[in-house]
Image (cartoon, rainbow, N blue to C red; front, side, top):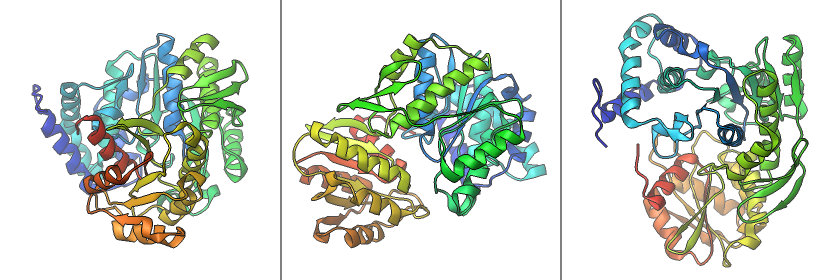
Amino acid sequence: MTVITDGLTYPEALAAIADRGRFGIHLGLGRVRALLHELDDPQLGLRGALIAGTNGKGSVLAMTGAALRASGLRVGETPKPHLITYRERLVVDGSPVPAETFARLVGDVLSVLDRVSSRLGPPTEFELLTAVTFRWFAEQDLDVALVEVGLGGRLDATHVWDGGVAIITNVDLDHQDRLGSTVTAIAREKAAIIERGDLAVTGADGDGLAVVRRRARRLAVPLTEVAPAPLLDWDRDRIQVALSRLGPTWVSLRGRHQAANAAVADATLDALEAAGIATVDPETRRIGYATVRWPGRLERLESDGREVILDGAHNPAGAIALAGALDDLRPFLTPGPLTLLTASMADKDVRGVVAALAGATALQGARVVCAAVDLPRALPAMELASLWRDVLPAPGRVTVATSVEDGLQRALAGATGPIVVAGSLYLVGDVRGRLTGEVGP
């Protein structure tokens, strides 16, 4: 795609963002604050919810956004990571930012980049994208912004913004190298998004909840604590939960773990209403939840008559949720043994993910095809295969692919039942693009 703007072409904008990737991840707010200040602080006019948590952030954002849009409100959303194109990370009214607009916005931020770099060092890829997002949102006359935290909370670039409502979906172990080795330490990083004057919502429990409570109490912030909504029923494509204000409610996302996310999403709408930001009536909430879509998260596709289930499941908690969902969904899927196509990042708890997935009854007797995505952080396919051979009673069912494309061909060629693609959202995005024909970046 070559879209020409007054400044950068779209490929040039993508190249500029990729160039920022060489600076890696450097948590801190100084650079992004300076970038936004050079752009006249576009974030300051936005109200809405900042959403942190180990898992479920994207699902809560998707459900909340669907209900707000069903009410006719103009909503900006920042789902992440993207699966196919960067433009998926900037969404207004359900549509990604146009390529020519994206290129213009990147050019705007690049025009002030040198002034920031000379004082504070070079901004990272995520910091540049955060500045681009807030600049675009400020142009869009939004009613509500829903912003997903990237990593942690306290030092994440998105925390430069406070929209009035702070959400912490849950707290579990992930990114221990950057956030801390215990749930308590990780919870401190996430709870830091709660600011004085906010309304806060959390679905955390145990040690994580204790930390969130202390933060809210110290800042005199009203905190709504929600338990998972009672799960009433499910079928192949949705679950039914009982929500306090709505009663039995269908949610068009798969997996019983979405009952917890549905409760947090509904409480988020309550908080937005209490903060005077947006109001969504009960019937419209039901419509939103019944029509929500969240690509790549227990998403079901078909390829040449075969069912394919896509899900990230990149940490042990996510893998446990996927394992339970596969067991629940198995009666509704086509017969025949499952095939798992999997790849992981080396800096994840891969052994924990493998153990969790191997515990799924639906995966007993499955073939496992191990691949590696084309990224420096990727775990080599041979190492991943070794972990799977350690836990399977028939290690001969594990094969190694030379690439994601080779892995997908192996999975499709040998499958007599459904194919599950899981272990990394980078893998999911790659496979999804190949199956749907969608192109990126």
